[in-house]
Image (cartoon, one colour):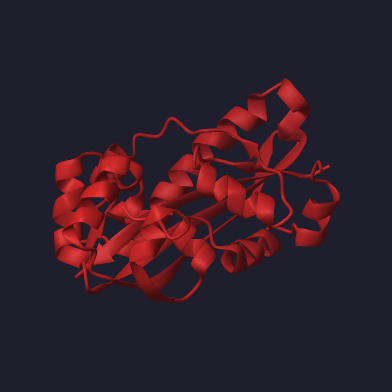
Length: 216
């Protein structure tokens, strides 16, 4: 029985998979994202940055799933790692973490467009070994509205934008301030279903197979 292991603590990613008929096993990586990004050469393209971050997360969790005795995941699973960042004028923006940074980012992007780039890495694990891998990224253009001052204050006070890439969500309170998108909405939430389906196929796992083996 092939199980999908999600290398992420993101509730939004988990819910995207659940809504699409997959109940993932959640195993959170211990990757230092800042260290991984800092180790990349200067001028690394944004697409490569998010792919390498996704790869680091998937590889970290794959090592855990291979040696895990709980559930025997190492016998047959696919590990999925993702990383999202917002590219504004070519500059990558991750999670703001503080209200001050979130406010500065919204001051810059309100009423403008930016690209939400999500890197994906899929690792196939069989009998304790990684036997296949596939990586790629998706890019979706997000057109932001201009929140009124009281709206932005309330949004930042909610805490939601502090822990998400680009300081906004599409599927939460931030959705009020997105005029439209060009591309895949699931990728903006953090895990692109069309791209993930292709990458799973690249490592020999079909969606119907995962549906058949996903707990109800």
